[in-house]
Image 1: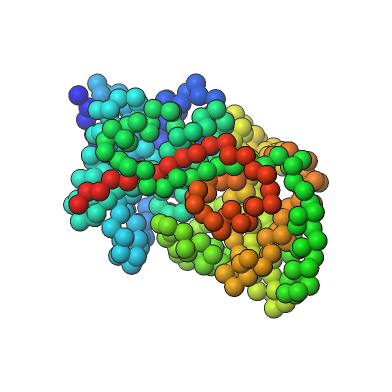
Image 2: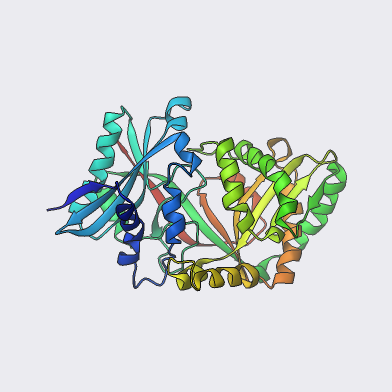
Length: 373
């Protein structure tokens, strides 16, 4: 018999965050989070996402031992403004026991029913900037820092509980040696002259900061057409500026502006921190921070996190300018492999951006949906 307990105390929150360290203890592909950072993300006084969202965290026990966890999430912008009556759930991990997973799913469904919501979908976070999806193929490759990893048995638990596949995502990689500069070098020069555009490169975080608000505004505009998109609020932008932008090597941030210095395109890339986080084992101190700083400076794998272009400039070759800037940087940094974070399999806009590159799909993931009305 299993029992569920809602997280109420600091100790229980720490137990919630640390549970995956138990079930992935011997997994070479799992990338652990930094425990303190994960705990802070659920701090309702610190994380502004809670101004427009609620999250209830649950632990599942058997014989006083934790055997599962889940976060039940309601994004009220999505529900009230977008009129999408969705109950979200994420941070969902469990041992290979259907009684455990069913208890977790039932709890989320009950909360959705009480709020008169129509369906549950997960695993997802609060918004499109969070982790997403259950891995269904490609279990043999180390997970990126911004993705969840899971054991192969997870998908069968969703199916056994009556969930149906909702969205499908792919993760791809491109060996840097396969990138042919000719496909974007000449084009980017023509596009710059035709539309009077120029690329901005940075060496200091202080140089990036004046553009960050505009970048997130452009993010909201350029990603608005994606399913389940929830705009980033002004409070969240301020939070990300303080918490994350300073962490990114400014050399890996590229902007494209027009003749009036208005931002029309952006991209954020980071070296892969996966192996560094494995070495850190969830802790920044005493040595975890050293591993992360080393990866930030010397990492040979590059991860494309965000890339966006203003709608009126889409399909005009602006991405060629961005790719040209990264090509020059990657040569200098000795980059060996380029990774793309999960993209919807039917995202035609993303496919067009990368159509000239020979990408290899190395992992697939899905979200699952179940009607509760």
